[in-house]
Length: 94
Image 1 (cartoon, helix red, strand yellow):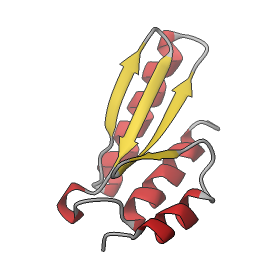
Image 2: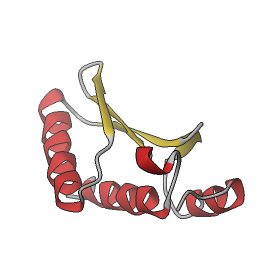
Image 3: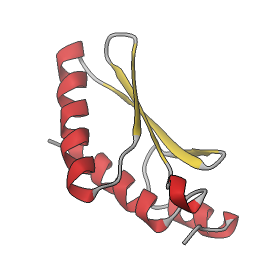
């Protein structure tokens, strides 16, 4: 079920470094080098496949990855998006 603005703002308080842009939540990740950035993207892909919920992934510069998450079939943000973002946050600790 699509969340309203108050619910979205509440959910954002529990996520480090994520922000809202329209109907997406977004986080920028920066790594020491290109190889680490790609390793992270591969871990994101594995997690997304396991959860059957997939972010948009943008690799830029030589060490940065931007993830954008939304639930397209709901037409906006859902609890599923915030749970996925939490999984991605934990991947940075690996």
